[in-house]
Length: 461
Image (cartoon, rainbow, N blue to C red; front, top):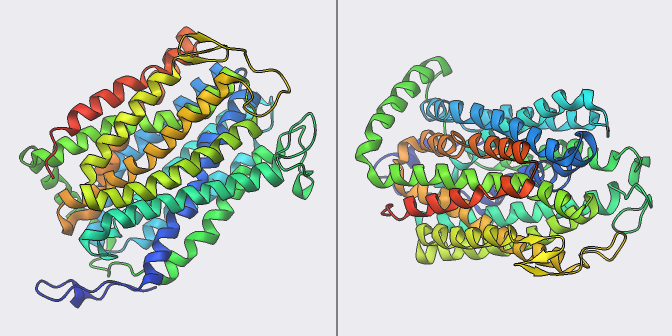
């Protein structure tokens, strides 16, 4: 396992950066981790759970929200602590390996989620929450490796390229599931017209359930180059000593935040707009399933289109980040998200922006109804804006945070991204349960983006 040479990090020494192979291997972490978010939490397993495992879509959305809330609370409480310990200990890769293993094992456990079997709902939701914890913690320590890979003026491009690569990985994984694994229960055929591979049974949705094991195997295969070729920080001290020092440093950092006004304003803004974005991605597929009656093939195709839009958005956002600065990219992305969410609330199966349209025809062409096409267009805008928002956010943190405590501040970054992340899914779950209306639950997202944008305006790069 390679490490960064200590003498290259001494004050006054010329800064050296690893070769391109090391940077490319780091970028592939986003490719490795993305299927969890694409296949499980957004386009395949979450809608399948809501429509086929839970009693009904509204109950499924509510239960899923509670599971994501529990995971978000655990991530919020532990991220800054673990980040501070990692800064004191030095190494990043052991943490990525440990939490990657949690992601792999929990994702594979989703295979047991048979349709209509309400007894599996508690273990399924537990597995989903654990997989979320594994994915998010592994990402915290992977992000903390960024400043050692490229010069500061190229951080934005690196972040955007990583996010774009992740979107492409999501597209490929979706094509595999939709084209070769998940089939329409009525026709027994996949999106590409094949019978499912490995004898997967369409009637019991084995293709949808296979998204979990595929996510685990995918992560193992594609994260391996990062462990082999990307240099890690050198070890500084044993974990027990790092625990004491890391917690002390964390306390000092928290006490100093009121004096770091821009950093504090950014972390608070990130807390709010990330809550809205995570909730939007978590419930977008479920909302479409309930509104239009979409199943895996329609939702998965929608996901591929969004991922393509997100790939171009993240790539362009990375270039704009280095040219205009991450704050401008974040603000522009939030405006697009805000307007898109407001418009989605005015789209129903028989109306678009208050104009009556013909509803979808059962068994009709893919996205044949006007309301479905409007939803796809708005989804593309959300996909194109979501990538730059997240990529530029980690770039802005690198610009604002002390370089010797970068993992700790990425832990605080994850804290602010998760400390209230349970509130968004929880409120959406509660509002949906009380009103029995998915639209009422989704309307909450407008508030998050407006508040996040207002706070971002107080940040000075």
